[in-house]
Length: 249
Ligand SMILES: NC(=O)c1ccc[n+]([C@@H]2O[C@H](COP(=O)([O-])OP(=O)(O)OC[C@H]3O[C@@H](n4cnc5c(N)ncnc54)[C@H](OP(=O)(O)O)[C@@H]3O)[C@@H](O)[C@H]2O)c1
Image (cartoon, rainbow, N blue to C red; front, side):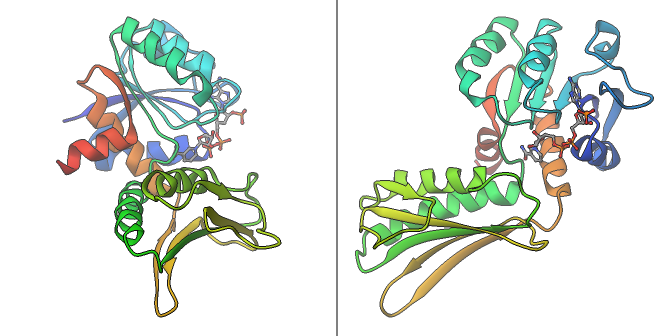
């Protein structure tokens, strides 16, 4: 099933998606980026006319406006740009009014999404054995702007939702002593490490660790292209986890 794409944002992710699109039988028919050569510089009817799905990897400061413009042209959309989730309900209503298909995700890695399901399962299983304590840590290269990572926050929500003991996550150093209802999720920033997230379960006699490591940003581009194919003929408001759940069932 071929999909005609418009890319919004032609930075690192936009370029990677353009390069990988043919592997997914996708064709990039237009690119919108305000400062790049040979691109449309704003969202217009002409820029979108041949596109079936728009994929946005632009910038948190413009994403709200981009989504509203694309919806006004009633085009299906995949959004990888983050930083707008406080407007989720508002956008959901606008998607329903527009009658289009819309899919967003904070992390388009297939592996991380399945990893989250494993973390939920493992937390539920170890929850029945109080001798095990759960913890997490993540490590990224020293250029990463934020700490903890958005994914660490998501993973701790998954753990808290499936643990009867842990009530809150601690992202700062735990001092003087961690309480049993506290989940410690630590962050390390150094060197060139690729994004790594680890969730562990520890007892006096054994340790189990689940680990996910991103070796290339192309994993996010693969996920976004799969999402574009999935949303092409759908209507409604979805996140990336909905797509994974649909593929798995
Ligand atoms: N969900 C995921 O799995 C995932 C994965 C990776 C990245 N991301 C997110 O995706 C976004 C883009 O990441 P990136 O690494 O590709 O960033 P990037 O290299 O900075 O690329 C963003 C591009 O969008 C352009 N842009 C700015 N305003 C725009 C507008 N109004 N319309 C269209 N394009 C516009 C920027 O132009 P200027 O440089 O001239 O401003 C830049 O060329 C970030 O928010 C990042 O956090 C999400």
